[in-house]
Image (tube, rainbow, N blue to C red; front, side, top):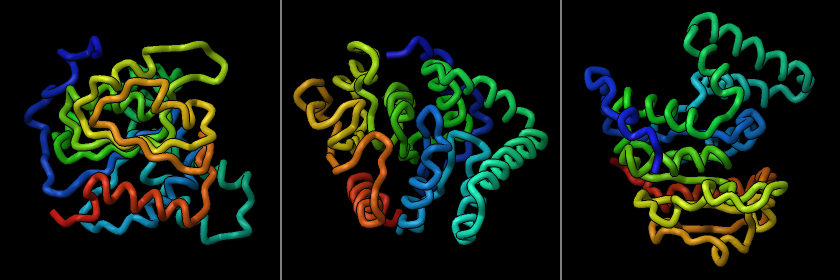
Length: 244
């Protein structure tokens, strides 16, 4: 599936630290910061108490904590939120120089580069079998490309990018989904410009893939009630609500 097989897993066996709990790994779209409000809404509704939340972006956990605080300050100017984000990224980078390297590589959002980086992160932690990936858009493409090779437990994607609105047909976006062996839940907006209601008829999908449609678009501009519905669906399909 990918020309990365020799690099993907078992890079540093001595670094493995298997956990008994489920891991919910958030893998964002190209500009994951656009989904800060969505992530906050979904994670705040997560009921399972046996889940450890991790992020593809190392600083995202700190940023998520910051956003939770900011959400309680209604008068905070939008400009201040952006400034706070940059301050956190700079401080995190100074304390963790490898993060600056990550940001530099992530700048181009190259799919294969993201695949290798994410796979290395998962393998070094030794958490593949416990990992449920919650992804958005291109993050779903990246996650589904490495899922079988690593033995990921489950992949969830909100708004899979089957096509680009301004490009022609690009089979590399979806061809691998026909043979996917990892269980995957795709939650797609009926008005998603990257693939709406037509995807089930237009694209060949593995029997391991379940598709659920919501009345939204690619940006997932959703109500609080719909956020609750999404979390309940994810918990039911992946088994996150069950105790281990």
